[in-house]
Each structure stands twice: as structure tokens, then as C-alpha cells.
Length: 258
Image (cartoon, rainbow, N blue to C red; front, top):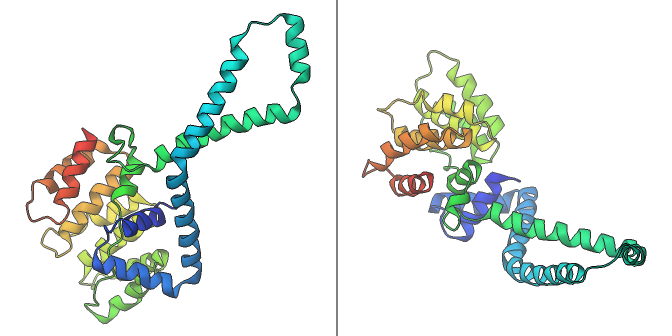
């Protein structure tokens, strides 16, 4: 499952993206045909599951339960069993198997994709991460050296952004280290490497403009790593800051983690 794309689609459809995030998302849809195709197919699948899931599940479970009930209702002898078994065609056996697989699929998938606010008690750390992770837009250029990584980052080429950022950070004379480490961490999170993301984010200076955002993405890195106690501690710190942009999200996540 593409967690980043799923999260973007859900936040886009529910109006949770900021104006900058929405613009960046729509721009990529219009400029990147392959991304637009993937997003369209993914959105169609999700929409179909959500719209038809409940109705199909109800119908199939009713039929399946009825069939099982009829099969178990009347005791039969060994001879009857042999005759019964002989009469059951390969098609019928496959039909029951398909029904069982369908039930597992329809029950499990919606629960897996379910919003944490609906099933907080069943939410895993991966689900919590997916529900709260969104990629901030590329910042405005603060110097000429930042242009290559900003360009890659803005296009969603996170490996390319990582490569350029690490080159900058390898230079002892480079001054924009906090901003670079912040977006390096976000880029690592975007490609599913939370340990490397956390390593970069913890290098952001508390005096930096990017500090609050680095705190938030550090908490998400800890969630992704399954380090819930450390994540809870950091989220509590964020929730205690009235001016923190993610204060409300942090409080909601803390309620789920309790």
C-alpha cells in the first residue's frame, strides 16, 4: 500500500490539506501523468470500497451464515455424508472458499483503512502515522545552493532531494543546516525510512524557524518506529505549546495512545 499517496488522497478529499499543500498536490496531478493515473486508480478503488463495502458485506454475510446454518442443522450418517460429499461439485467447494475469502477481505480491509477516530482502539502505529503524516510544501529558496534539492523536493523526487541535501550537509561551511536537516528528515519519512528521518530531525536547532515542524515530524518518526512511549512524551510537549501548529493533532494522538 502507498501510505503517502493514500494519506494525500484522504486529506485532499476531506479538505484537510493546507492551501499550499492542495496547490502542490493539484499541480503534480496536472504535470505528472503517471502520478495522476496512479492517484485516480487509487481513489477509485478506495471510493468503491467505502461505498459498497457495507452493503456487500451485509449481503454476503447473510448468505454465508444461512448456508453454514443449513449445512449444520441436520445430523447425518456416515453413508449420507459420503453421498453428500460426492454430490458437492468442485465448483461448489470453490464457491464456499471464495465466500470465505471475500468475508475476510471485506472485513479486514476496511478496518485496516479505517480512520483512527472511528476505531481508535484498533489503530496501529502505521495507521496513526498514515493518518497524520502529510508532506509540507517546498520552502522558498533562501540561497542559491538550496535550489537543486528544492526542485527535487517540489517534484516529489525525495531520493533526489536527500542526495542533494546530504551533499550540502557534508560541507562544514554550509550554514543552513537546520532547514536542510528538517527537509532531509521529512524526505526520509516520505520514502519510509523513519530511523534516518529521526536522526536528521534531531539535529534541527531549537532556535530555528523549522524547530516546531521538526518536533512534529520527530514524533511521527517515533510513531512509525513503534516507539510509543517516546512519541507520547514528545507529543505531550507539543500539546503543551499553545502556539504550536500541531497542538490539536498532538492532543488527538495522545487520546488514541492512552
